[in-house]
Image (cartoon, rainbow, N blue to C red; front, side, top):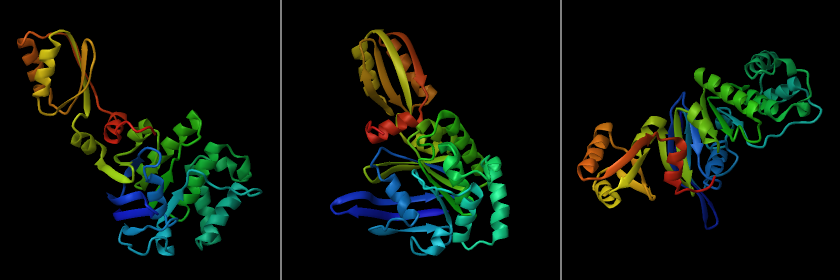
Length: 308
C-alpha cells in the first residue's frame, strides 16, 4: 500500500529524516512511534504532500505520481494534530465544504455525510455549529471529513492529543472499527499503550532514522531482551553474574543488592537450564519471575531511554 523509499529531509545541516525506507501493507493499522523530534511528523507531512522532501520517493498502491500532486492527495485522508474548523459553519456545511473541494456531487456528499456521521457517532450533531463541539467531537468530525472522498490511506497525527479519557476510548474504538472494515491506517502517537491495543504493525523512529518496523509480534521477536526477568538472590551473587554473562541471548540490565534484572530472548527451556546451573553452583535463589515484553520496554531499549 504505502511505499517509502530512501526518504530524506534536510534543514540546512540538520537532517530531520535520514534515508527512511518503509512498506506498510494494505489493511494494516500501523503505529508510528518515536520521541519528540524523531521525524515522525516530518515524514507524515511529506507523505501527505504538505512538505517537500530533499530526496527519496513515496508511492501509494500503484500510484507513483509526484508527492503532493492532486492524484496523490486524492488517495490520502489526513487528520492533523492541530486541526482547523470554521466559525459559523454547521457540521453538515463543514462536510459540504470539504466534499466540494474534491469535486463531489451534492447528492453524494449528503449521502456520505449521513453514513460517516453515524460511523463517528455524530448523527445528532448534523445541524450543530462546529465551533461549539467538544475537542473529542471535533476530532471525530475530522476523521469523518478525512474519509469523505474514500481515501486508500488514512493518516492521523496524534489523534488522541488533548482528549479526555472518555474521548480517547471513543477514538480508539472508532479506529479499530475502521481497521476491521479493511481501511489502511497510519497513526502517530505518544500513547504507547493505546498503540499496542490497536495496531498490528509498528515502526520506531529516533533522530530521523527508522530503527525497526514490522508486525508487532515479529518486531518483539527480533529484539534481544524482549522479556525482562527478575532473579532474586540470597547469596552467590558473583557466581550468578558469571553464569549469566556466559549465556547467549542475555543482557544484564541492572544489579541490586539482592536482585539481578536481565533482558532475555531465551526459551523457557533455556531459562530452566541456567537457573538449574545456578542452583548446582550453590547460588541460593529466593525467587525469579519473567516480566513479559511491552511496547514501552521495546521503545526504551531502542531509543536509549529517550523521553517522549
